[in-house]
Image (cartoon, rainbow, N blue to C red; front, side, top):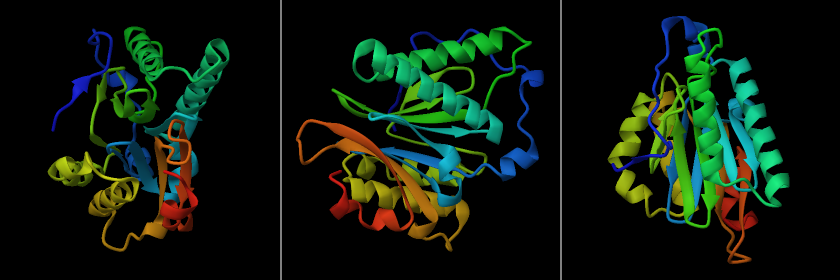
Length: 234
């Protein structure tokens, strides 16, 4: 599986013990999120009951998912939305993905270098789309970021990593429907065989087949996913 660093420069500091506040209770209430990138789509998936908190539509070209305590997720989600909003007004268009990732890198390093500030969350996934196609960034708490073909976050995400790593070659050429299928099977590795498609939610970005040029970002839950191939142009 190939990947590359997306940070402008490697971080100079790491987390101290005092800065970590992720408790066992937080971990138990933090379901996994998986991310996948195909030829013209990027997908984030988690369980439906956590979607309103975990999947954040930052703009028409970006969806984020954060792992960590609930209040940290709310705080970071608000920051991402505000930055995308201000970036759109400054540029008369969506903020470039690189600038969003650079902002998160700067933020992570600032909070590590100043011990009186508490580092937020345990990491996040940023799914985005630009003129080069779909992207999936795994951003650590330190601000280090990686542009990956597949990723998973959350304390119970290790089985999903194994599944995604074993199928990364197929995933890289998958359609939107096939990405959802792979993401669902990866989540099932973590959450058990009783998981159904009605139990999950997805954030999907991709090439608009109707206009041939525009891209968009939508979050779908449960029954809405079944209509992916007919009611949406992704």
